Image (cartoon, rainbow, N blue to C red; front, side, top):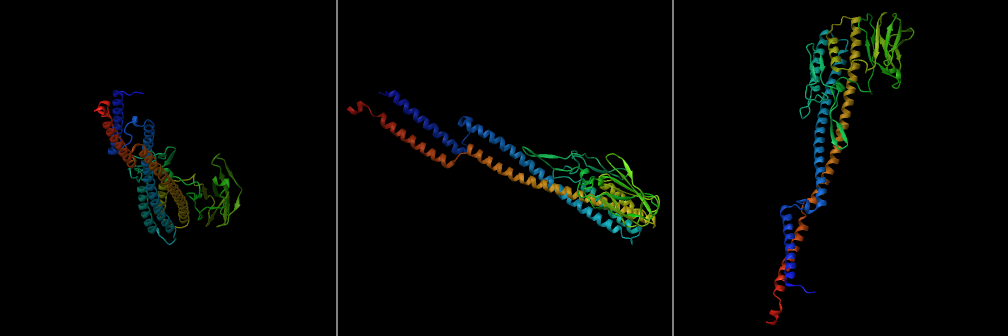
Length: 407
């Protein structure tokens, strides 16, 4: 097969041109550090790089969301801890107020301290997260949830929403609680029914706290009224909250301090009730659950002079009622704080997973788009040597001809 001079020159120039183009490409990759600068360099790799870039952007957003969620949860956790501390202080003062040696002035001083603690509690109820959003306003996080109206009543202006944040492609995490869930509710577990003496009782009967004897008894959800038909007999009325139907049992003999069974719970009444006196035992969810309203009532009770007899009995029963309500609130706050702590741990675990996925995605993207210096420099050197060899060979071979041989 004959190869003309034109073909020979064309073939060698094309080969050297290809080697120069390859050398130029390798040099660009080395100098820029980027191995995939345009889709034409590697169409399949470019498609994969686009997908990985999108994944990296999504993971970055989730990382930001997780940080925001964790900051809010940590702030709520800290705030609920402070709320519990205030409630513990109130609990201590209520126990102290029950001391029979205190006079009206002493109880008034305790009421003043409770007013200060109520203000502290309201400040905590209006706490904000690092972004300035109110923790306990529900979806109305831009407006202060708790205010005091002209009558001195603490009012809630938030809603019942529970803010959430998307922390992974398939998971939302609750980042806050509304004020009603914290300061106006009771937990489903760990609460006790609230005993109370009816206003206007004329005897010296004092109701005790409620003892739970059978937590699974469905009758615990009913409201009970103990009505004295005489100083020595009483009847028990039981109201079903679902139907509103009230049933009343027959007269029973009364012995001061003896347990009165009410479904799966019991209560006792000390002192000497008069005919017409009555006492109630209300499930925690059916009575007042607003901690601010309950505190206001407690302060009023402590500010009211006690003159002995029926007045003392009414005061002691009111303290029992306030203590039951307070302990239910404390249980609710502790339960809420435990739930917040669980969500914190959940977000922290997701942060670890997201960080791992982010690093893996970044590594895969770098492998596709960034230059492997050791490998590329080796290719560059090899291509450069091949080009130099081709150029030298071309110079020598192009000078070989029959006329030169004859000369």
